[in-house]
Length: 219
Image 1 (cartoon, rainbow, N blue to C red):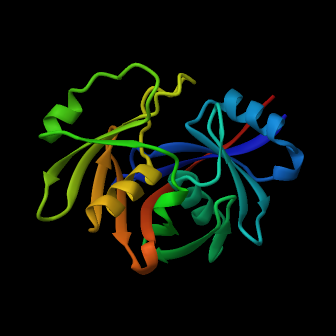
Image 2 (spheres, rainbow, N blue to C red):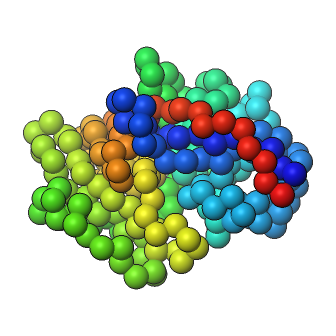
């Protein structure tokens, strides 16, 4: 049995919603990409993170169908859980800071997996979108309030691996922030919330609230 925890990352201001994240604290118990991929597939979360060195913040990230060098909600969740000043990912060193109940991580747009950012005319149009057929990772977004930087978004991975819609997608919010060049407050999915901030040197910070759902086991 593999012990794991479940965190909800990018919760709303009231602590509700958030994207579930599987966390295997004892990464050494699951050596090798093939075994880790199998565990991530069995857990069925949009992403699962394996902690390889808690003191250093070294992590390894998987969707149900692929290994990722970097992803937003696993990094925010792992940073909150481990309390480290930085994370070591396959993409590079991810700086971490905390501000009240927000955990911030800093990444580069080129680290983010490919996403198609598709703008719509209103939040209502985004709300009414059906899940598109597999084949393309689509981040559908619209302004809720452009002057204040408030965005409504939905994420459709399109991988055909059981995740038809992603509740909250930090990497896509990072890419949108890099494109628009301004801070954003993104409401995604059922009510998850992501904050972003462009930084010098091409970095973008992504932040959210994290809550713990509890330890579980899988075979």
